[in-house]
Structures are given as structure tokens and as C-alpha cells.
Amino acid sequence: MSTPSKRKILGIGILKESSSQDPAYSPERVKQEVDQELARLREAGFEFTLYFADSKDIEATMPAVKSLLRDSAWDGVSVGFGLRGAIEYTALFEDIVNAVITETRGNVPKLMFTSSTTDIYDAAIRVLGARP
Image (cartoon, helix red, strand yellow):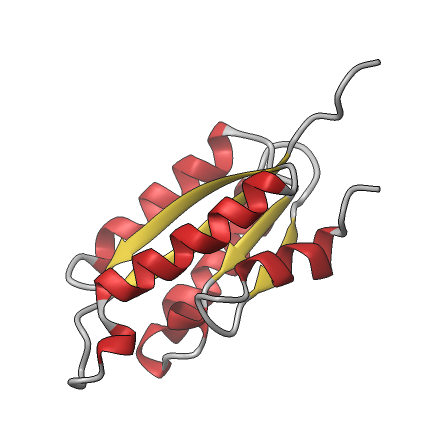
């Protein structure tokens, strides 16, 4: 009996210097929480590729995202709340969503949007479903 292929997700987020003294938003904390979520996804049979935009080099984001979208067939694309929820990144968020539609190979992947670094797994299950 063959094992089912892993479903592929591209995750796009942003790392930025915290504008407050709250350590909950430090890049280190964000990476730690994301790593925990990715471990859960791997255990559930997902393959997750992560791209973090650099808040100090936003211009590099879209070429990198378009390249990732073209390089593989994706089942889902997850966009983090740091991009979706920040007014200063509205145009970038729109560009990412439109690139998912125009730049992907094969079927357009399902979009998923997280509300924090601790709900990446839940978003994947909500949108793509769990394997039986």
C-alpha cells in the first residue's frame, strides 16, 4: 500500500523589529512559535515551505514570492497576520494574493489566513482538511 503524497503549503510572513518592548512580538519569539506549528504540520503529513519577508527590504519580497509560486505546485498558501493585519503592508498583502492567482503552476492553491503565529496548523486543517 502506498503512502499518500504530502500536501504542500507555502507560508508567507514577515519578520519585523518590534515597535514595542513586548517580547511576545520579537523575531525570536515569532520564529519559535512558527517552528512549533510547523512541527505539528509535518506530523500531520504536510510539507511546509516558509518565506519571511524582511521589513527592511520589502522590495525583495515580490520577486521572491513569485519565484516560489512558480517553482512548485502548491495545495495552499498561508499569509500571516503580520502582513494581512498591518496597514503599512496592505499593498504588499494585495500583491501577494494576486500573485497566488496569476503566478502559480497548475491549479490555484487555496488561500489561508492566520490570526497569529500559533494558529498556522489550525488554518491548514480548516482550509485543506485533515487526512483520514
